Image (cartoon, rainbow, N blue to C red; front, side):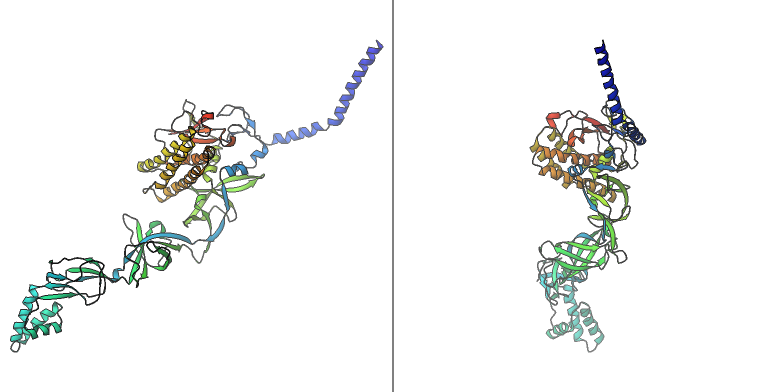
Length: 585
């Protein structure tokens, strides 16, 4: 009994000792933990979905897309990008995002002009006949022949001249008694530009001249022959067009959008296509004050010496003129064209900042000035020294839009919208800007869309060779596409899409395997979705589908005409992985 009591007391003592040691060692933890909990409670906790990171909620629950339980978002993942979009360096490399520091430079820009060599209109002469009659002989029988002043061009038989000479000879017989009649007959021949020496020869020979020569009034090159042998010509009728080509004009087409930037007196450097390797210089001496009603272009004239005759009319020329600079503002803030996203009404760029060691991209609306060829002058919205995205802007904007932040298509920041449900599990997204274009333009753009869908189907079937062929067809479709009816603003919007799509397609063509092709297909799909929404190319309906496991588990979208999932990023290995996230009608 005593032994059992001792054992009992022993165990009680050990228990008491353990409680005491625990209090000594961990006694201060509760206060610190409580303080930490209070701080954590004071912060706003954000919940997200592991499969759909664009979902952000202030309370736990189920993901509205896949139904999985939401998990708390770590603080370092949130950063301070509540309005911006955060990306890691690795994600930026995968998305091919490039940036640059905004700076000022001269606002001069190079404008490329196309034109032709033309005859100087002031040195073009219409050689006419001063004697009516029939062409008995042509000394100049083809265009391009050189003539000298005073050279006989043709010989004319003129019954009227024969009659006038007969009258002169008769008046000469009675000139002593009727000198006025003789002078009148002589003056009649002078009016036909018959010289006194020729008239005296007629009187001395006492025989009328049957055929009279037509001589060149100027020297030059025959540019047009207007009569043939045997033709009857009236007085004043043109026989040849003669031009002096020792000085010519180069007439350049000046488009309406460039009129404000080019002025008379601007220096221009140009090349003649048929004279490779040579460069000519001149200045714009005249700009046509009238625009062509059909072409919408004016003419800029450059006068060029051509004594050697190397420049020939109708030769093609290409010139570069520097324009746009002023003495008052020689330096202006400029950004490249690729940095600008156009919505039809607004121009936006993405500015890169740093937050907690991660890149954060914020959309910024800017006011643009003149176009400088490959760049724009920024009038408002950016400061010198800020860093902006110059490549991959559509990729970033698409990610921002999916995350529910303010984007090009949705300028107002709002929670992630899942659209309205059609009852078949699809949702229709309604927040995007649309550009109204005619059906002919849409039909041309649908040709590009169809090539994209053929490329997608090739990736679905795991056929790398076919995907390469379809990518080349898409590149050709992009390069040959012409949209003449677009306005200036609409064309700027399309050019942004065109540049991004062409870049992505070239990467697909140059990819060595299907994995690389699928990686670049992500960027192509993002841009194509934006093109479809902006220009409203849905037709019978298109579906935006998404695979959450593509793009290294960050997810990637693609377009399909069917709501049935056929995954282009994994092919047969995960053919049905994904879901319809948006219906475009």
